[in-house]
Image (cartoon, helix red, strand yellow):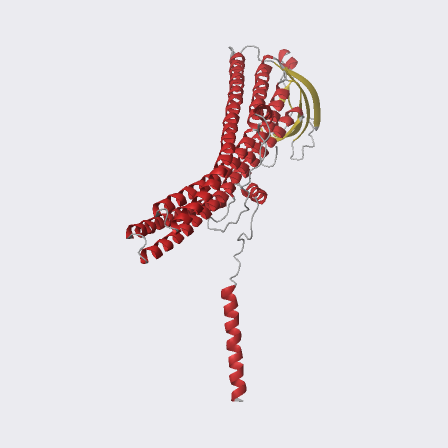
Length: 456
């Protein structure tokens, strides 16, 4: 019995230890924590789904849509109803004037009631308003179109931000790899120099110099890792994640030539940029506001229909002095023909706002052209740097290989090796920056053209 009990206890202990080890080796995933590598497309979709800026822009579209629908209701008939109660101090009476003229005693006859209830329904249908109702509706409809363009602008801006943040992570990871390779080379050189120093082939100064350069390389690696952490924090912020959430991105640093000429890009930008479309719509909206102001020069004509019920009780079922119901239809014209120039001043102000909108449109066109030119020049500069830095990397690698071999043979000095290593590290870093700058500039060029990241 004791042996069986002991075996059971040991079996339980082994099972507990196994479960504990499994728990330590495989920690549970945190709920909502991103897993695996995220692509650029997935990053953009997540940012668009979570962005408060974009949500605010969509709410602005809803506001403009509601205002447009509100303006449309001015075309439709307007219905109203009212219910009233009036209590008189005494019942109305009627006296025949002819009796007074004949000198007879007048006989007062009751002609109404003290309690009077009234319920009525009225409909107003505008027939003519000088074009003001139509102009007002068209202005709000144009405003809706402009707000939708502003929403599109917010989308394109967010896409560019996410794309830039994504490429900055890729660049930071590459720069960290360059810094890590530099530390490995410096460490190998330090070990070789130490061996040479121990056998008396090099002075102590060479070993100290190698140690100092290795320390500098490790500091550069720390700065590269810090830069990577900052790039990931920026990326997580754009995607509305916890800033400490792990991020793994795809390596998309690859050179893809862009074949379009500047003139074609400029024409595309002037045609597709949402900012230009927005300001063009604002000019059209200002023109409709001028028409709206001018409508006050004309009279307004309305058709009015009324149905009423009366009574001396709340049920408005009439009384012996008055019928229970009545109705009428009326056409009514109203014209304010003199207001001391009020309408003229309103029209003048609307015309000035229209000219302001036209000037703003011209400024936006100029700004778009300049922005596109700068983006084009940045792209071409980065493109030329790619070919230059690629050759520099090949030459620096060969220089470092030859210098290291010569140092092993004690033909070159430790300083030559350190210089060759620094040259190779700088060449690799410059090539990484050139590639990332090219892709970021390409994204900026497409944004300047009014295109998304996956459009030409």
